[in-house]
Image (cartoon, rainbow, N blue to C red; front, side, top):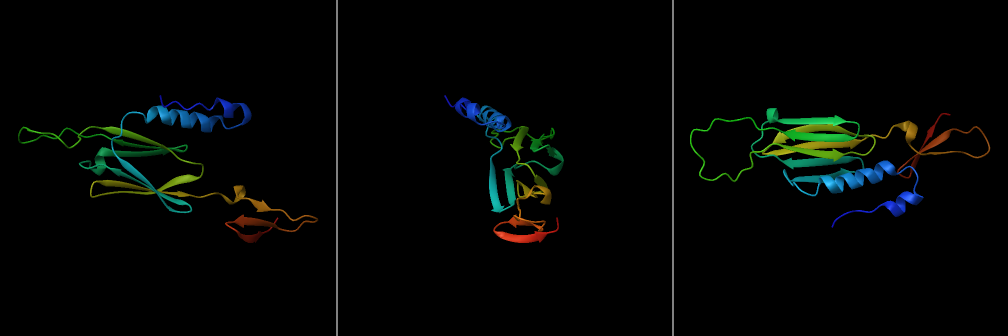
Length: 156
């Protein structure tokens, strides 16, 4: 059995219910179908790429929806009239739906379909208001934004 038990953590960690629920739901949802295959690649500190193998699908057959940290990729094959009978069908011709939970401040930047691969580029853009700031002790000195080890001055 592949069940995750977060009850010991739920007792001592307050406010992480959404995270535990997401992990449990993903374990349940991903236990079966592996179609279409995909890669998730980290391309930089704040850049990611999801690549799905969608051979035989045209742009009109694919639908990409992003709403509140959930990216949904759907493929629906239209009925195509063939000239003859297939003796063997080895190329998947079925519809699919893939769901990806995205972290806060991650958005879809670009999507492209080429050579049977659907490539979706994602970027994380953290607003200045939620970036950590150093606070000077002893006076109304300007706040300093901490950004990857470098500091920049910001007016208070």
